[in-house]
Length: 253
Image (cartoon, rainbow, N blue to C red):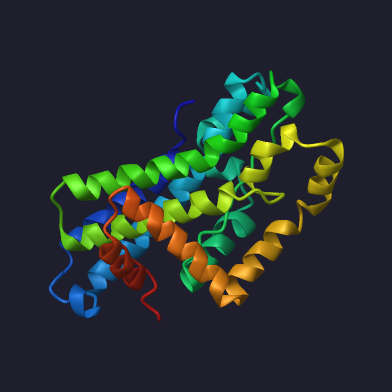
């Protein structure tokens, strides 16, 4: 369960982004004309932080499964916090990052294969599914508290605030009771055999339909962001800073 060098490298990129954002010229942030150093820093901070949170999300699934009876996750390398064990590099890291840059929506990226027959109970199966999105919520709340309590540069404030908001968005997306997402996995053990069979058939395409709706239906995306900002505000998030951070991250717009 020792963190892999890959994970430590991702954290190093994230920290580097934070340092660059902290030392950039913050005088023009309010006019949304960002210093290139701040843009570079925010991009590295948010992209690196998102990949790190993806790792923690999948590690959360794996560690709960391990403690719940599925020791096969250790042999699969899921406890190493090596993001390569959870993902296909193109489909699970590069493609979601592209969508993050284009639309600001963090698509779920990784996957761990749990042998549910080894788990001790239906309750454990539900907690295995919930562990991932709850880790995102925990990271989002922690980052929000850091921004609120620790004095720091405005460049770092906007980067961390947007990263915290993305964690809330990821939590909401993953907790939806849709086949293929963690919310469905949490309720699936208690469903009828017919409902579970339907979920198994819908699992490959249901998330694709969801994300197509989010990208193509303006009202759906707005609803997602409104819900995310509501939770973000409730845990003490700095909404304006998160919006500035999104602008700097999506600088090409």
